[in-house]
Image (cartoon, rainbow, N blue to C red):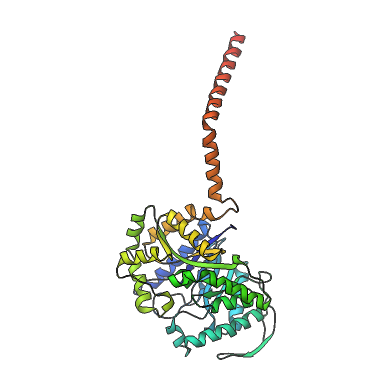
Length: 392
């Protein structure tokens, strides 16, 4: 397989009632940690209500994170396009593209919390219809076009960008998908990437994975666009420890709070999660095929399962959460970087397999080589003794 990229999709999820200043600092520190560990991408969410997903502007967060990191690419995951003037969405992303020297990415979606759109007088139907209209405007602006168009929320008159993107021809763009074909349809139409969020967080979504990319390819062919599976990103759930027992104990810290948020607060039926207590919640994650709470072997098996189900993709994004305390959470990311990523990177022969093959080869030759080494020592010792005798 091609080199599979790894990263995070950071909504983020913080228990309501905690210190938001410290929670945001933990988010920045997590992105720094992932940068040091060699993760490829971090996508940052936009939300404005419900008290749990507390980043209101992913662009501002990205600007702060970019100054603390060196390599990791930073994306809006997602910009709720319907809430904004499409001209300013494009302008802000071009600015970030320059400030980060090409590390910025634009993720587009309708917005997931109805309590966000309600404050703007928009219905969930409105936001989805606006996403299609506004994304078309954003793409035209980024191509250098001048746009005059009246939308439901904004009036653009000879609108144009005064800066070209730093990245040529443009930075990465992706459209969010949950379970319906809406996101894949737009990704194919514009020839951009796909962020499959709910497609790996629910059983129905997991089953829809392969269909999602079929929609992308069908729409791309219809509109004369070129798409690549390397631009398809899947969002999944994991918490990893040295043993399954440790992983199960770790998530007792906060998994119930996360589940209750989706069960009782976030009106997002596509991400309905089951489980009455922590054990049932763990079983739901592991048995529905949507995630892995366990060991590095479990994590590798889950990535392979998603690869097989989807037919191949470009990036595995792990949903940021606080199921475990900060120390155990940090350790989980370290274990994945150390023991999972190398099995899906390196090309035809993965980095992990290359070193395992080298170990097996050396082990198979050890007996013969050990004898040769001993013989070499004996030969040099004998030679020295003769040399010494010849001098006396």
